[in-house]
Length: 356
Image (cartoon, rainbow, N blue to C red; front, side):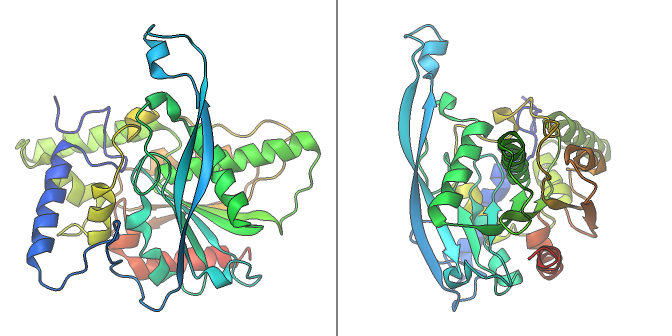
């Protein structure tokens, strides 16, 4: 089997040999005296300001699906409904209702790589309330074993449940990699629902603006990009033992050793619905005619990102307006936040500040 097969690529979830890189990074971390233990259950949160207030909580959601055994002819095709728990973490909760700096709802990637690697946003985006949650299937949230319990549609349902439970009336959306796909599908659903129900385009309620970071419009496109980059690396050096490490350092995260937040995220990743294999046929499509106007958007990616220009250029035609900007982060790959935090945070805060 290839080191980085098309079925896994490098969407966010580590591939076989990238996992070895993670293990090595963890080993180095343990050898460094005094380093924080990470953002996992019971651990500290490195890189975060100690004075930032934080509230942890949970949201109950339900998912209805036909068990996978029925697909195999082992049972009746009758749907079941299960209840799951979603772990939430809200930084600066006292600012959640701010009219000057609306909160940011953060959607992690993967699928099924929890938001530990995005917690440094709290350091680089000051003052704002920031809402994180572990999507079903990873981290501290429920992790159903049945693959049929998962879908993008179900994940959008969960996002709506989190927004409702937390009482968010005005907010911005930020999605990293797959998280941007989730953000887009949520916004499309809201826009189509408003269009059907005769709702107004109220720019002062709901999602005020959205930012995608390294989010492709199509899984096929990002798979093709990753395969091409892998071929280039093989042409430079055909040593497959080092291919995973070289790909990570060139196109995923250009820091060595791997930053601790990323190590923590991979350590708590799910193992049922993950990576591009979970959504192999995804391709973003614009909302139906008659949908209300979607929020203004910005699409960021790294200069060396495996989510290349071809992967993101289609976003401008997926929104039902022309207010979609793009930004390439010089010197960065897929994890610009970890590679150039100050610049990354400034871009986020400046963009969202225009729509507060």
